[in-house]
Length: 277
Image 1 (cartoon, rainbow, N blue to C red):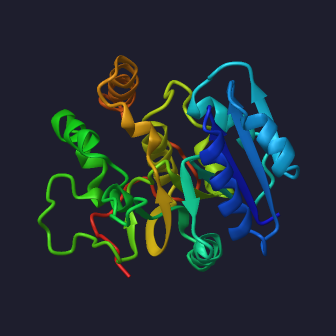
Image 2: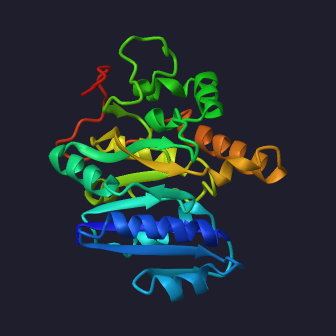
């Protein structure tokens, strides 16, 4: 099996239909399996999958267990050489999976890969190339954790070698909207930290994959359309609790002690060089 795709869904029936249609089409010439983990949806999501995507493997939860725990449920079952975790509010380009897998096959040092993201009106999303939204960048600067994310240029954004929209480059963090990982790298890093309910799980996993010695890459030679439905209620109490709560979890986890994943023969320290193709 070449590829395992995992989508976590919570009451996004219409968006999920688009996401599944696009990813099934993009992976049609690749041996694959598709998992949908449903977090207790009350809309027609499950009925829609059964009626329109009978080949999709469904994991049904009775409540919303969050993104990290839901992904872990499927990660324990996947059999692909690569694992794609993609949000339900994204549309995958026709050649996206083909091109990203080709890149990963050619770059054996790659543990994870993120790609160029655009909005439905064609606007480039800057978090594509470094994984961070602005609040996360500020948080890392204030706490001093930015030094562990040197390839995101959080403290020196004016450097001339900073990656541009269409430059393939090494990066620190993959954005959770589209994360393609080598299964070998995930096995070394371990499952997602389930304390991250909605936000922060992607940053934490990306960081731990780098600790194994693998690299993360930003690959702009293809794209996804990201509707970013999670970011539309930024002034709600739930958003504040979940978003800033994730920052507190991250700080308590890494601020005073950097974790070590000891893998024989693999380096634990990162050189300051920044690789751009």
